[in-house]
Length: 131
Image (cartoon, rainbow, N blue to C red; front, side, top):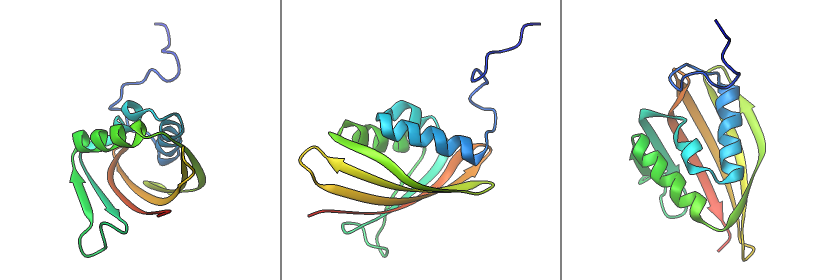
């Protein structure tokens, strides 16, 4: 029986935090919303805290469709993204993301992702930007 080419494993096969982090980083840098959206569990919870959504009233969305919608919105913006730091755990990872809009404005975000069965099940982000 011929062996499968590397990377052709079914999407439902669990993968480690380092692999999910690397894929999310690649999706971010290349602005690939579909790739990013594929990393989330069906019942993912996304929580964002920033100037507009303080800790007492965070921005909360649930479900893979909501995650994909957020990524489509983010990737549609004319900006560059880079990941300047990562921390990898057994079933979680954190990244520090730096972004620059075409007109020069900057954004910094810290993201913590918790995995279940190789998919992001919960993501918590804190971000701030130039005014």
